[in-house]
Structure formats: C-alpha cells, structure tokens
Length: 129
Image 1: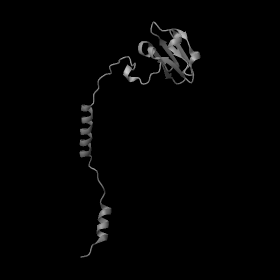
Image 2: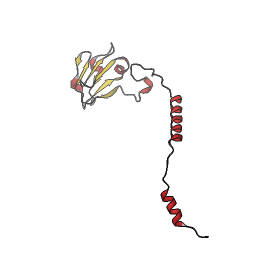
Image 3: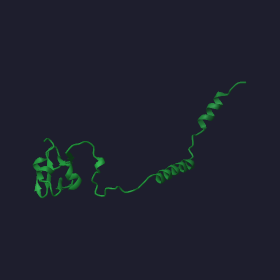
Image 4: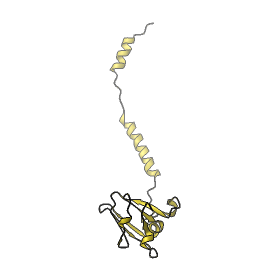
C-alpha cells in the first residue's frame, strides 16, 4: 500500500488553525471568580500610614527619608533645610512613631511635628552625620 504524501500535505496546508473563545472565556471567568472570592480586601490596622513596630527592620535610631528634589524641611516651624544631603534627611524613629510627617512633593518640602518631649536637633539630622 502506498501513501499519498502530496494529498496529505495539501490537506494540512488547507486546514486553518482555529481557536474557540467560548471555553477560553469560561475558564478565564472561573479563575477570576476564584481570585476575587479568595482575596481579602480588609483595610490595614494603621489608618495613619505609619509603619507598625514589627514592620521596621534594624536597630537604627534614624531612618533616611528620601524625597525627589527635596529643598525644604521644617520641624516645629523651624527651617532645618541645611541638613538636607542628596535630597534626603534622617528622621528619628520616635518622630516616625509618635510625631507627624507631611511630605509635599509638589512644594519639594517636608513638614515635621515632633512629639512634645523631643527637640528639633534630636528629631532630624543630616544623612551623612
């Protein structure tokens, strides 16, 4: 028995691959439904956006806060912009935990309110210090 290779080759060339979208969409929606139902959309426990004590790593007393184009830092109404190095400033952990930090990128400034028992000199320092 001989094989007609030319006939088989023509048959393969004429057949166009097709893709059935109905099962694809069914599977896609099933995966989407699974992801939505298995996800949790709970709000965080920290509404202020401050990191929890367990979220910080290391034992550093000051943390570097970089802001693109940072030009001005005000702590309790006092300008300490001279401490800025490389668009960054070092902020004490107590200020991060108990104080208030407002970053204003359009104005290229940071406004810091320290806890009552902390001085301006303790609150921030130059990153190189």
